[in-house]
Each structure stands twice: as structure tokens, then as C-alpha cells.
Length: 460
Figure 1 (tube, helix red, strand yellow):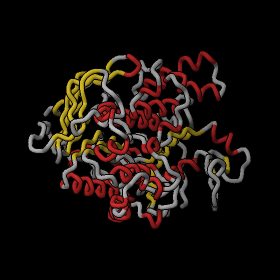
Figure 2: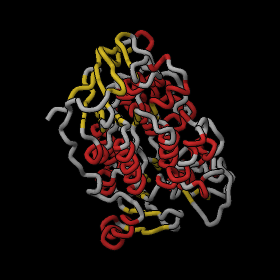
Figure 3: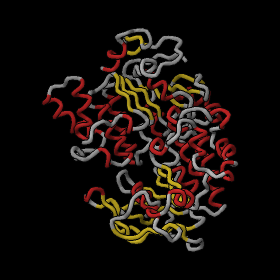
């Protein structure tokens, strides 16, 4: 690929999962090839520094570039929120007084005012993403690279973030490189769009309007999201199904971390066979915590949870894995093996292993291409699909999915929908905690919203 990006402009990078978008972001930040050696051809100059050949490039670029990783866990380093934002400023030698003033301002820019003394490990996935962004914004970098910044954000948080990005651009405070699947938010900000094919080669480059008019059908065929593709109205539904056998029941459940304020407060929910349920709500409202309670990864402070009539927190691991599958918001948290094949087949019975090849092909991770690859070297979207495959291969009665579609191109999104519909038709139940309105509109027949620590029917 070849392109120029002028100061103050915004480059939007789009492409299917695994097309190299995140690798390009790492290269622009000076981390490829210095931190991730590999074959390098061509010339990349960032802020006057030649990335591959200039010995001073790493330090020179590091002082000018801010990079937000796709996974916030990779760049949160301190236990307390305000210390994490200050970490980069300290490394740059900011005076103490200026740091004290800048940290709360950076947190306010991402909607985390008042979070200064919270523990970063106790934040929700979306809140962690905002915290990582605050740390990136705090030093006021000249080049800001954002890799899927809205992947775990609720709609309000995503809109707030893009308001801040628009303000950065309007004020000429940074040159922007944006990797983002939410086309309706991202395309209006772009001065140039770089579209990549699945093999990393350029499909198109130019002004957004020209790219859409000349290459729109080719981009859509390649699996890219385009403006208006995600526009969807969430159905107003919420009444519990009364036709299927209960798979999991929670009654008056409450939960608090470290004896603090309850995250879940007297919540009750029943999920039955054949249910296609979704829970929506703001970041930090307790969606992930409720999901973990339902599958026994957390034990309620008060109340009861019954999975197939038993307490899931007391079930043997092998039994639990075949009754319920849980996909973490961060897929790396559940990887155990060094290759994709070993990861997806861990603990499977022979009858379950027989269907793995077909499942992986359906999810766009065929084992003839991916079997020997490291789960940690996959793209974010590929990691998400692998984590789902590990759970789907066991065909549990209950599937609890935390942000199942983040980082997915159109093909991955539609493939997951098809598989989940098949599993429900076969008698499983699905509960998804998600901000993806398109997924909810296409899949769910029952929609709940977390309010005051409880799942309630979504209001009209």
C-alpha cells in the first residue's frame, strides 16, 4: 500500500477481520518492526522519522504518537485510575503541577470524571477502554491512532467519544488514524479512507465520497461495514418465554465486589430453552457481572442461581462446561493453548471433535489455514470468533455471550447469527450482553435493559 496523510487530517482504515489494520496501527506507532520483527519492504515515515531504518525512530515517534490498542487490558498498567492516566505523563517528565491538572481533564474528556480513585480492575470493559483512551489523550499527542475505540462502548459512550475526536480534529490538535467498524460514526470524520482486502492489499484509497461511489459494492462484497449498514431499531420486547423448560433461573440475586456498593441488586431472570435474549445497558451497569453469576463464575452475595436445577458455582468443571458456555468480553482471558487447533479441541469428547472442522469453517477460521497459528497472533475479530468456537463446540444448553460481535466484519457477523439460530432451533438458549443494535434487532426476540442493577423489560 502507498498513501500520504497530511497534518490535521483523519485517515479511516477499514477492512475485514485479519486484513492487517491493527498491524498497520502498530507500524505507524513505531512498534513494527522494532517490537514485532518480520519481513519489511518499502518506506514508512512518521513525523520525519523512518520507522524501519532510523535508529532514533522508536524514541522520536514514541514522544509524538498516541496509540489506543483494540484490547484495553494491554495498556492499563496501574491499579488506580488516576495513576494509570499519569503513568505516561510521568514517563515524559511532565511537571507535577501540570500532571495534577491534566489527569482529571483527560478523564473528563472520556466521560470518567469522578473515577480518579477507582480500581481499574473493577471497571467494566467499556470503562477500561475509556480509561486507556484517557491515558493516550493525556500527553496531547500529535498523531493519534485509535484501533476499534468503540468496540466495548455503549451507544452513549461511543457518541461521546466521537464528539471528542471531532473536537480534536476541528481544533487541529492531532492528526488522526482511525480503525473502526461503526461506519455511521467514522465515515463523516474521515478526510481519506484506506480500504484493505483480506490479504492486506489496498482495495481503495481516497476521499470518503469517492471511495463509496466507485468501490461501494466491492467493499460490501469484501465484508466491510459501510454507512447505514448498522442502522437498526431494537425491538421492544421483554416478556419471559413460558413455553420452554427453564435452563437457568436467578431469584433476588445481589452481588458486590470487595464489600462495596452492589453491582447487582435483587435481580431475577429466567432463561428457557429456545430463548433468544439480549441484555443492553450502559457501561458499568452490571451486564457482565450478571452473566458470570448465571454460569457460576461468581457467587451471589444474596439470592440463588440454579442452572438445570443445580448451583452452577458448585458444579464440576466438566459438567459446567457442557451445561453452560460463557464468552468473555475479552477473548484472551479464556485462551489456554498455544495453537488454534489445540485451543478449540481442549477437553472435547470424540463425538464433539468430529464437528470442529465444519464449525471453524463456518466462523471463517478454517483449520487448514489457522490450525497451527497462535491464538494470541490473531486479529481481535478472529480472537473473538475463536473464543466463541471453543464454547460452541461443546453444544451447551446455555450460551452466555458478552459482546459477541465486537470487531466483526459483515461476514463474521452474519456467520455468527446463522450458527446461533441453528443452536436455538436445536434446543439451546442464548443470552447476549451487547451494545450492537444490529445484532439485537436481527437475533433477539426478548430484550432486557440493566437498570439499577436489575434486568428489566426494555421500555418503549
